[in-house]
Image (cartoon, rainbow, N blue to C red; front, top):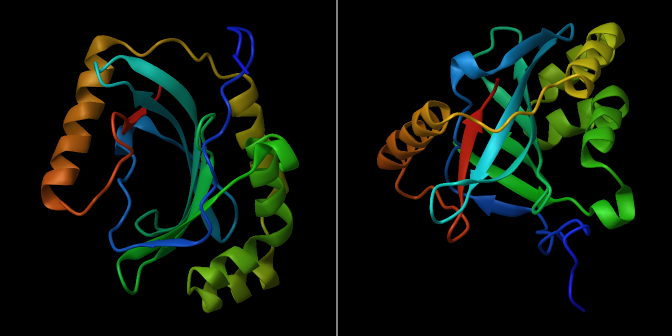
Length: 197
């Protein structure tokens, strides 16, 4: 079957709990918008995938879930069009476990991610090895008005094409990270970059 230009690209095959022995490429600090959710903080990022020629190929939302001090990330939702997935970040071992997301069965990953944050997030924290923080979230709850604000920010985001300078900055960030973490892997021909308007 040939895809027409109006059909969205199909997702790549989902992975099932693949353990990666490296830490994730962090967001560029001044390229995120922060939201306080109560006992957690959320960093909203617009990420960019580039093609082998360095041109923007795909943009999509990443939701980074941190503690209140904004230094330790526990869970990440990468709501990409071609390879949507999420990570449990295992800080004790400096590794992560990635799970693929099936948009055909489950719909928009952005919507699914917010439902997970609102309704099941202590389970995500426990899978990331953070039982004490999960207990705290269960006791205190999350700020639903703040979660609404994140959703509103996404809905009203002007997703313009990144500037050449922004892509250069993001590429340099990626290169520096990979130099420090040579085991960091990417899909052939694609590099995960960060950008926000």
